[in-house]
Image 1 (cartoon, rainbow, N blue to C red):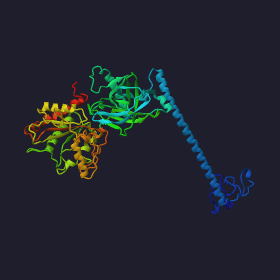
Image 2: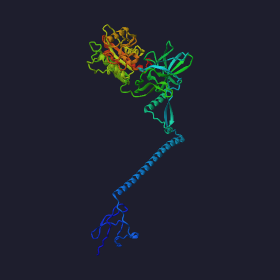
Image 3: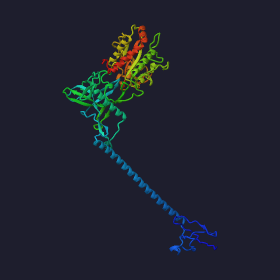
Image 4: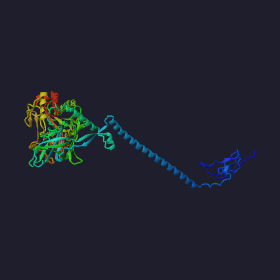
Length: 598
């Protein structure tokens, strides 16, 4: 058979697909290249070399091969086109997604509004939310009075200030009024969302408002049968009002205060829940009334107070000054809501006197420090059984060599531990001893600035329940079993001399009205004239001497260890003594801080 050979030019152009034709072998075994003009050989036609089928059979000029630079340039152009195409695709996709998001939001708003409208048409009330608007000064007459001191002493509000009445006006009565600080409005939620005004209240505030409304409903049916309390809460045009005391000095300035004694007047635990603006209402002799806002001139810290535990519940009361954003007027804001008692806050403190190497009094049986701890532990247990949270200032595990007679003002000393507790009451337990006393008996000391009614109730109850007797000591006695010890002029002079001998400045603030017993004086803060500031090198510092939140404190001398019969009754009948103290204190609290049985 005759061999046929197909001749292909050496330079092979690219196919339309962009790939080069592969060389192939002829029937003779020789390698040949494809024709640059896409010459196609059909075995069935036997086309001659160099010829093309169809209208290109005449042949075409060969293409010039591309240089390396041209290939790179073409490749770059193709890449640029691909990048531009991808960018356009992304822009289109993002635009489409944004459009979908806008349509989705519009749909949600339309559905929400449609639901409210459909609910209204169907007779269903739309979902409502509460908003609060400040209205605490709507009854204010435009003038202010100056508050020079405010705070708490035990459960009692302390508020002192002054003002000058208008020319020709004579004050006849003053009352502290609580005006609603906020007005609660119910607004459809859809409107707030549309206007961007919705604000979620903290959960605990919602609880407080709910408790307030429910409590008001409950008490509506009870007010007719309630007995009037010592607090004498009044109601003027639906506003809670409390009588204030006042004096008029020679220059015509009115000085107002809550009560004549520290432990009377306005009990915080009996004040209402909610948020209120405190206004001072002055009634004049001509029958007119003027309401003043309270402006802070005290520089004292805001009050953060917790009520005594009652039925397992506590409330938090805050009292502080704020400014009205519209008028710039200063006002005193009172707020009360339910809250758990914090870990370091207590209802009552029991202080076992002495401790460490300070044994106190003693006899041939025991020491005072052991007896006070025994009594304190018993009182604590009985109070806790009634639901109160109680702190002991020492537990008996202190170092036996600790010089606790000089450690009461250490950071963890008895005074600072008690003050840090924010307790309302403190009972400091002691035992007496005097070789010249032959009868003995029960004694309880209170502040000279206090009403002695609670002290008297404790003394009376212990005598009645424990078979004790009142002490027959005359010094410092104000009534049976009740005593008040303040500094004498000689004692003040002795303190000043001691200060000079020990190279420190005398205190200069001690007067004959200053309480002598440190567990009464130092726990009361500014209200009882606490003064231990660290200048005396033998003592530490009362960190709470300038506090405006004082503790109402009492010191008990349960019996005379030096009188055998008296001590035998107190040691053998300790349970009854402890129970008498607890019964008196809890009865006082349960009867709205009064000894009147209701």
